[in-house]
Image 1: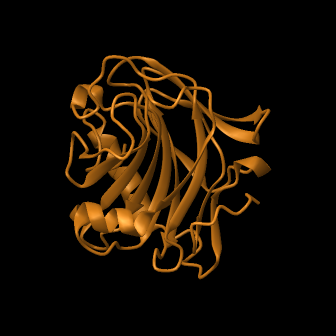
Image 2: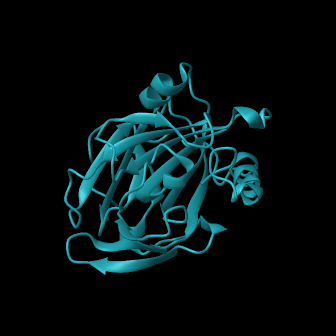
Image 3: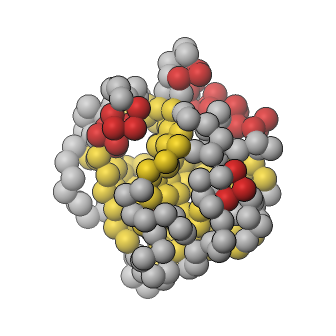
Amino acid sequence: MMTLLLDPPSAPLLPRLLVAALLVSAAGTVAAERIDVGQFSQGILDHWEAEEFSGITEYHLEADAEHGTVLGAQSQGAASGLFRELDLDLNVTPWLHWSWKVNNLLQGADERTKAGDDYPARIYVVFSGGMFFWKTRALNYVWSSHQAVDTEWPNAYTGNARMIAVQSAATSPGQWRNEVRDVRADYRRQFGEEPGKVAAVAIMTDTDNTGQTAKAWYGDIWFSESATKTVSK
């Protein structure tokens, strides 16, 4: 749950994640056909940092029969995430690719409200506001428990973050899903302007508001020049 972009009572902890995302450039912008962000299949967690908001979601590399090594996430009434700082130009590599799977959905929560702002799986893309930190924004690609696929709505805590349901209850738990999004186009549609550079990507499985339990798995994450789903390295 990121700065200005997510829920109190976690708010006092959020600025640390924002500042890190804005001020640290891990490797500089790379003009490349593909930029790997999460290489979990290679057993690599370098450059990923943890941030706790309300309790600790456990993240571990695990073996999966279908995807090999993946990142597993287990939350029991908790919310913490992993994030990686970037300095990425969407004019070069606008397409985000990832895969994910959930074990269960969350019951009885309205995700459009503060009390229901929990997701078994979500991926944040955070955009730098430069020196104007109040302009920092985020897209949240979520596995929704209650909203239909392609439903979009403002985050319950701030208009600086937008939620996009990529999967929903219509997808049975226990199935891997491969995703690809034109992040630049999503940003233009949500905020009505051109995006700044991507400052960070984050992963979060969170259930702190509902107090429920969720288990999810994440495959490799990367950006590319095109929508073609190249094989993970």
